[in-house]
Length: 103
Image (cartoon, rainbow, N blue to C red):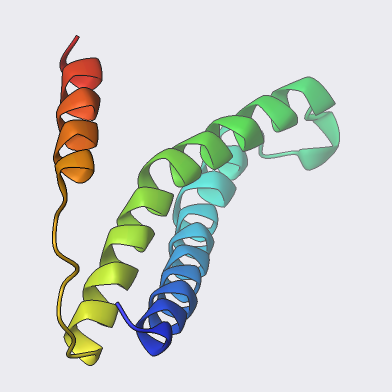
């Protein structure tokens, strides 16, 4: 991937992740807290932080990989370049990762 492709992937992935985080906060966190605790003054800090942590955990765990893959796809579509050739080290690393993930 070219230098321009790297920038496109980085910027588009960041923009996509920010949108995903905003959607999750607006459509999941705020309604859930409003439903669980209609009176914000009675919400304890521990409950608030626990729900906030869970929301962030889901957003980072699901939204970040999705944003990175989508950003890379956008960069691949925008830049026309030759893919790097695979070496034996690349193949052995991929096999090692597959073995670790499947174990």
